[in-house]
Length: 194
Image (cartoon, rainbow, N blue to C red; front, side):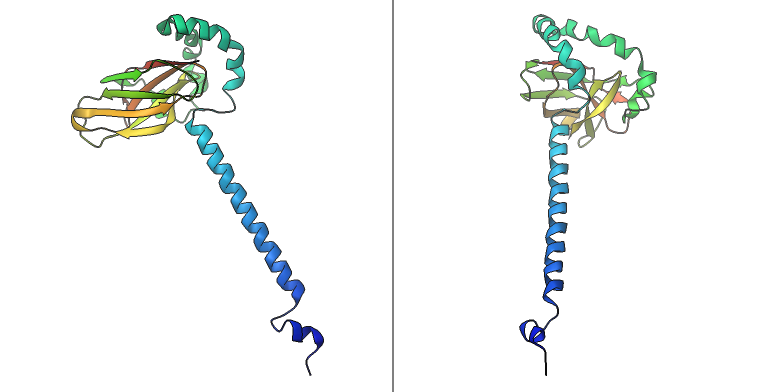
C-alpha cells in the first residue's frame, strides 16, 4: 500500500521538484543578466564611450570646446604630445597599424565637422586601387595609436564608401578609414564633439 506522500506526487519528492524549479529560475536569471550586461557594454563601445577616456577629458573639455569651435584644425594640436609616445602605448592597442606607418591612400570627408554628443556624422570617401566589396575599418586616434572604432563598411564602385558614426567622446576625435588587413588608410579627419 502506497504512503500518503506517494499518492500526492507519484513522480517523486515535492522538495526535489521545488529545488529543480528554483535552480532553473536561477540559471535563467544569470543568463539574462549576462546577456543584458553584454548588450549594454556593446552599446557603450559602439557609441565610443569607455571608462578610461571621460575622466582625463573632463578637465580639458571647457578649454577644448572654446578652441575647437573657433578653429577645428588647431584643436588637434593638443594631442601632439601623446602622438610622440606611440612606443609606450602600442602594446595596449589592438590595431596593427601602430607598428608601422600607414600608407595614406584616397580621400575622407566628414559632415558635419562639429557635432553634439552622439549626433550622427556622415563619413564619405574613396580608396584608390581597391575593388568593390573591400572591407574597410573606421579607426580613431587614441593615446598615440589607432584603435578600431566599432564601425566598418565596404567599398562600392571605384573604391567609394559611405558610413555613419556617432561619437560620444567630447573634444576633437581624429578619424580615418583603413583597408582591413593592410596598412592603407585614408588621410585623417577631425570631428569635434561639444
